[in-house]
Length: 243
Image 1 (cartoon, rainbow, N blue to C red):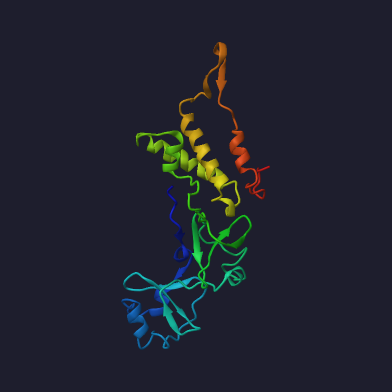
Image 2 (cartoon, rainbow, N blue to C red):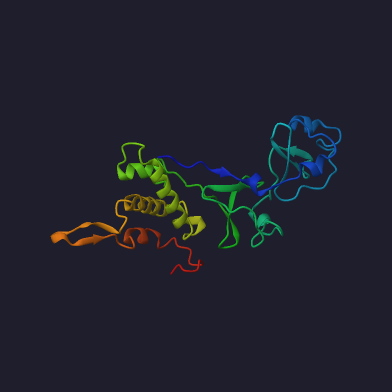
């Protein structure tokens, strides 16, 4: 089973302050050079303290931040030490964060190496991440390989249509469920069922699924009860229109 890669977006959330730290001096080539620098190096840096999620980009494109508690440069983006500190931050904390929205499987890494993500509906950070916990025999993951296995696809001929169906299904479901439930088995299976339904729907453009006994027209049902049941305990009731 293919598991989507976890995506660390700490640097995307953060702020690059390289020019503010080094201007007009040249940017150090790498972390070792920076640490040994007589003006900016470990124990010598006297500039402003690094704020939450601030960093500099070195000549080799690695990121670094100065830890004022140890007087050392570290190869990372600075980040709050823990969830409580982040939640209370005046710029990035609960109710204040206006940075990039977190997609499924994305997270930021805090100083204590825990992963957190921001739930825009609850306007709060939560401990954990959008990364599924994979048991030894695998979890259901809504990706194209799993969808193809579900519908019995034997070739790549319809890959573009499957991609479109999977993307539409993922957006529709993720817009309706709680962020912390996005990787739940039920939610991933619902995405796959909806994607399969959309993929097959192209064969019934007028809403006609086929013909029953004595030629009675069988129409495509407006709602799938199995999808509804899978999602019912994961829905975010704070979103208008979800009942």
